[in-house]
Length: 296
Ligand code: CP
Ligand code: NVA
Image (cartoon, rainbow, N blue to C red):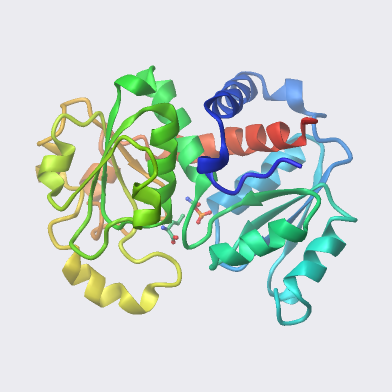
């Protein structure tokens, strides 16, 4: 059974297959309107979501399948063990889309499931986001090997998945974080093109894309105030953007905290592709589902 847990587990040919499906789906969505007929997917979300949940639910619907959204009621490892939930769901649905805190919990589920599992974000990774973002960059800029991305902010789940994605697609990536917020060494030690630094100005120099995300991710809300102080100088604003190439694209996975990690002027500016980036999640989620449902 195929899963999407981490981009680290994908081969470049699998990534290219997902990109190619996304392109076809975006061009001619009608062609795929029956591709998931009689397929059902459970969504288990322990954190809020707008883009990921809606794009998966709408994506499955538009391809003729069915989703079941499960929130608190199944309470992993409270009402019953993860392994019992995984073994039961495997007998009902074709795939499970999980957003949760602990990455280990997701891995425990995968170990006992016999259906496709999609990581819809954990504290460690957000692979669907990074795949979609790299495809968006490819759509805009062409060959990913010729592109330089600067990620400015927290070394979080989105950053980790971008690091894995850039390693696979051979895209150059600079990551600038405040001291103490760099991505985990288990991620950066992976064969990659990433350069880790603490100076946002140095990171954006000659960048084709500047990418940021919130300073306090879901689950880190208590650290919000301290992080605001620690991340001073890491806002994507006009002054910082001036250090990059004039046609440098601005990306943010959203939700954004305007006035914190990004200024209104930049997120609403002419180089921002933030909402196209969000739109593309729909095509890439559909592509991921189709790729997973293909027989091995
Ligand atoms: N970018 C993203 O995953 O958004 P949501 O948290 O709203 O799903
Ligand atoms: N890093 C953010 C991403 C949200 C899509 C979070 O985990 O909250």
